[in-house]
Amino acid sequence: MPRNTKKQKTDEEAKKKEKKWADSRARLRILDDLDDGSLPLYNKELSAEDAWNLVYKDLPEFSEVEFERFRDRLRDHRRQVIKRKNKCSMELEAYLHDRNLYPRQEIDRDGCTVFDISAAKKLLEQDVKEKKHLSMSRAALQASREEYMEYPAHKFKERIYQAVKREKFINYLEDKRSKDRHTTW
Image (cartoon, rainbow, N blue to C red; front, side, top):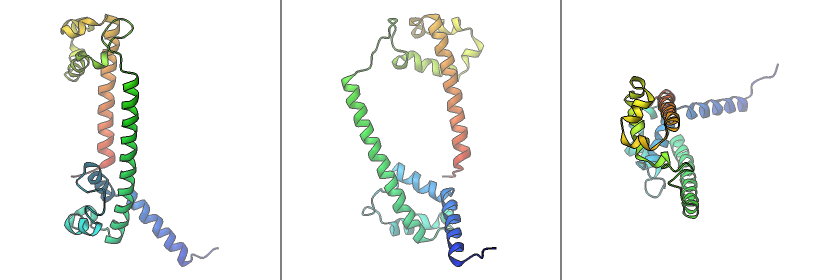
């Protein structure tokens, strides 16, 4: 039977601490603050020591976090967020370039305004939120607004189904996010 050495114990402890940090509310707080700009991305704007002393050391999420761990993790998360933001800006630039080369069509192949950019889409989303689609027939819902009349009945029916699916999906994501995050701030 192999004996546990001191090195094995420290490795196990380090793994437990990493796992604990990955699931911690302190980690989520740092990432949220970096994302929304309340914590600067660069150390020269606000050092880890200043951030710790001014804000984080008194927060309940950081009660079990030592400064050295906070400093190291803040450095890592700053790099992570900077890298992600740089990638996002490059992707946005590429998207705008492509949109300039290939502008979006405003009329579909059936001669109707593309539904995604029409006022009818927002109105239908609002009607689905208010559950009008449950109390009215599809034809009555379509006749209720002038913006809907541009679309043939068979296409409008598909748009109603799509709006209902979208509403359900958004509700699912909100529920999942609230269960995963457990944030109090």
